[in-house]
Amino acid sequence: MLGKVQSIGKAIQAVATSDPTNRVRRLYELADPERQFAHRSTRYINIGYWEDGTEDPDRAGEALALKLADIAGFEPAHTVLDVGFGYGEQDLAWLRANRIHKVHGLEVTPRHVEGACAQAESEGLQERTDFRVGSATELPFEEGAFDRVVALDSALHFYPRSAFLKEALRVLKPGGVLAAVDTIPLSGDTPRGTFRSPRFSLYRYSVPDANWYDRQTYARELLDAGFTDVDVTSIRDRTWEGWYRYWTSLVDDPDALKRLHPEAAREFVKEWSDKERIRQELDLLDSVTVLGRKP
Image (cartoon, rainbow, N blue to C red; front, side, top):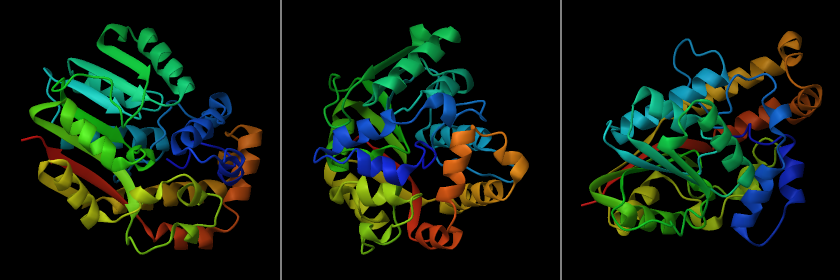
């Protein structure tokens, strides 16, 4: 997630606006994908699921996508809606690995939509995908259209998340499932202003107040929206911890830094200059899997 934008602290301040949706769109349009992914084989932009032996963000990114598919219970007959899909890497992985029938995707960032469409066409999967610009809180689909609605490391930006939950319930078929991986504070009492490092200033500037709550409140939000079989489970030991180990090792590895785009490497070293503060702020964050079923 935090790899989405170079020089993230400066970027967020540069796109300051009172409209949370426009703020997110502007934020992610700032990232230059050629520079951002110069050392990568994929364009996953999630935190990653760092299982034993996972060594890089490409494998971790796909592992988290497949973890979400497992939680959601994807089946070949399913039609899936992915909200906030980034460059669509997970959607194409689900079509290949889980062989779902079709995936529709909504994303506020036009550059991401263009990239996802181009990748789907290059893999011959354009007939099984529908990527478009759209809002998470005003889903442009009929009631009961989907077997599964998912959000991978994106719902923290939805303004507000509670409106997305209600819309997700509306467009799900009876018995359908909402599943997500999301970032929230471990304690809802942690002020967002606590996050001062460039790496985590995303949470200070670009997460709405209405979305800043812990696991217990998240579960209540799902129940209030009308979901049953609700579950919100922490996976931070497999997400944030692995993410931190990888990037802290990279910043101290001159050979690894040479594989980055030169400008990206300079920004990266600058942003990781205070690893102790980043560690302190990381210890305030949770990473959760989210599940709810439509009655």
